[in-house]
Image (cartoon, rainbow, N blue to C red; front, side, top):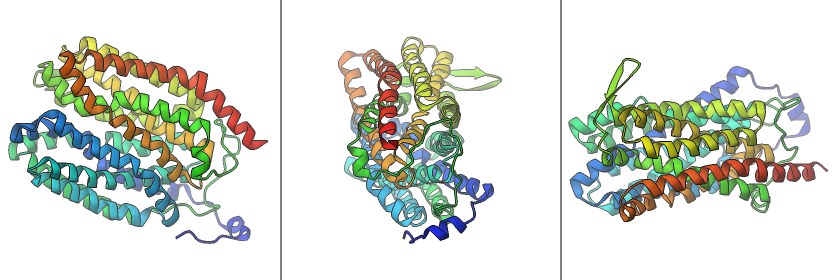
Length: 428
């Protein structure tokens, strides 16, 4: 529970060493790596589940939506508890939940049971995600974009090394075995590592002397955040950009199968793999690299400028993927571009939110903004519906590309002036 700290205590407390700060960051990253497969490995299970039970891809993908909704929409409540009691107990308990979730998936013989596993996994992953990112934002006010990006990279790239082992286990032992053993392993690691996590005490972190990115001088409570215009502008932008990325995450395997290129070998730099496995592996790596990269860039040139560059690249990449996805090599390359230009939202938005609203309630406030990912997830099943209705993926890709381009423009012409006015008023 939060301790009562006097001014004398704060002034006399030594600033934490760099090894302490980076140690806390690394512990959070490890926890994020362990939950990455819950989202990014899901696409490998969709077709095997459908082949066994014939529930239909649209019905199975509802589980993905439930996972994302419970992972995101409960984070404000979970974030409040983390801000109040610290990350250790909350994240450790959530490690148990994510293990239980995949154990349930391994025995699910009905959609109801599959949906239950998705909900439990979402709750556990939400606590781990929110707690790890929030802790990074608190420990690194001087390098907020980079710290948030490195932590989010654990979630984005964490499944890169396990994509092929999971695919091989599904092929050799069935998807149930993959759910069971990977679920147990991931959950146990989270429980053990989370025991080492803690939030910084007042006075332990350095105050940026002259930050390139403007930061607030006060801490805003959640209700103040909800009543401010910058929050809702960011929320709308988050939904726009998140929709395209989540669609690609959930539908990449079905898209490759529909274009009949999923098993065609692709060779890049001497490495040869089936197109889908290659795309998934590269996507996980690039989706991880983009988060600290664009987070670092935003620390140097500003959040909104970085958003414009990344979101515009995402829109162009999605549109190009539509036209060239029938070529296995271009499918691999362009899907990597899409993931590289999408994953940065998970470093730019938490950093921007904490810049505007302060560090004390960073986990809770970003949790409120993070629910936008859940809102975007509601649109993922519509991708299957729209594709079935139109007979192609064209409409889905075009809509996703347009949303990203609009969000890119909004970063400069809407968010930046509103954010500047709000922060100027707070400092007056």
